[in-house]
Length: 505
Image (cartoon, rainbow, N blue to C red; front, side, top):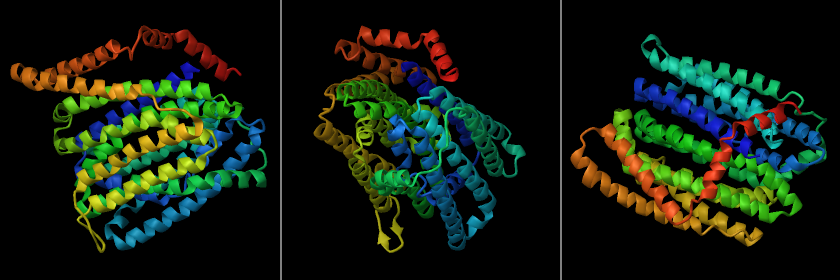
């Protein structure tokens, strides 16, 4: 199982890094207003798909342990296609409404059309992707996703390196994304061969899906609003360039870190469901603590490097985005909060306590929405607000996750008697001490004797990581057993055997 875990994490991380590098070149070569428009158009389409999830995906993961799984998949597929049709109608209506209120939107109707078609294809493919994941067919699910992400990255690299030859680079990007999403649908169907059987949808299962997903309905809507509404508010209040600045950090820098944490937990959700079915709470606790421990170490390492050297990284690689440094300092904590808490949050889904999960997540997203309305604009319709712009947006997206961390742990302990790991507090203390030491080394020593910024970045990052991991070993938060575990993960034979087992069954 650990081989599938690593393959999922590494494949998504590598493809995300390549995709982010492609967008890095795009950020270097494409003007800020165009990038702001790109973020805005995607947000309009995403808001049109307000009801696309409504909790059905996580419920389907929950049903992965059922014996008559074919009945569940047939019902799940029909429900998702019906919901998709509703969202397409909403998207078209939203585009028409906005085109009347914002006259410039009519100039981008072709772009919106391609983005809408791409969204439709991706969501159809995602049904089969979820089915493969829920059946723990990790290789079959990850290979198509990896190929398509790399393909999209190559097209972005092409347009980035030849930007002067394109009169409408955004149109090229939209068309290429549409083509690759179509290819993704074809590939995922090919890889899904023999992995699904579509039985006739059953009315009782339709009602069961809707009943179990009902508590997640409001949460799913607040999720879409919390993710996309702020982009419209920021663009409306401060223009395309401000949205480009925020999107650079939120959509690309933070997103690659969130991919790492989400790929970890989606593998274990079907296992959590099976362990809850059998009442094996101890195994769930052990897996939760393992994910929490390694996630904490990984993301605290990233936080230390960013807080120490984030300014150098931006100045060296994207000097035109130096004004985004404060946004990065604020939002870099989000992946840490999510990664160490997602296992606790998923206890409620796997344990069929969707109401608790929905209430917690709805509260978090509602707080984000309220904070966005009061922190971003100077005025929104008849409401006067603080007008903090990009910084207000970053604060609104970050603060509510602190509440989310504590509330999830409280209810996980109350319902399942799974107490939080106290060692996470020690990790944070060690990271804080390592940060202070590394901060003084950089500014009191390295900055005085070295002029080359790249050299300062390399030495300072090495010292930061060395200090952090050194303290982890001293306090026995990392041991020889952890090193042996990592060496086992490097055993290529186990990956080959796992790959054969999945494709030859």
